[in-house]
Length: 167
Picture: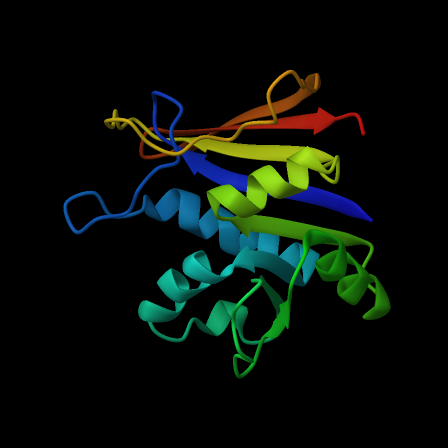
């Protein structure tokens, strides 16, 4: 199964944080919706899912298979809850998918990367500089080499880079 890690980063490389003073860039969120519709699914951590849910129902997500990875969440109506990255991929494969969109957060992204489960990175770089923050990283002493596939100006100062990652 092809796994695409999708993330929005600040100009200084941290995960871009959404606050009332710094809301998500609409260009990045529209791109996420587009990627999710193409995949038909997305995988997300519990905290990130709760952030999505707090915004209210999103009609763009109504027909998607949403998989929440959490080791301590009870069932959540309308989504699949699993306890590991491999369970998330197994569930989507059983449902007939050949690709999965990994949408967040930091702990989940890094767990997929540490287990060598990511085939592609889609990184949206916003024109915001933040203080210390969360980052995409591998365990100490590990590295993966990516190949630049594409760079796109999404508008609003958001630049997207897409990389393939060798497993």
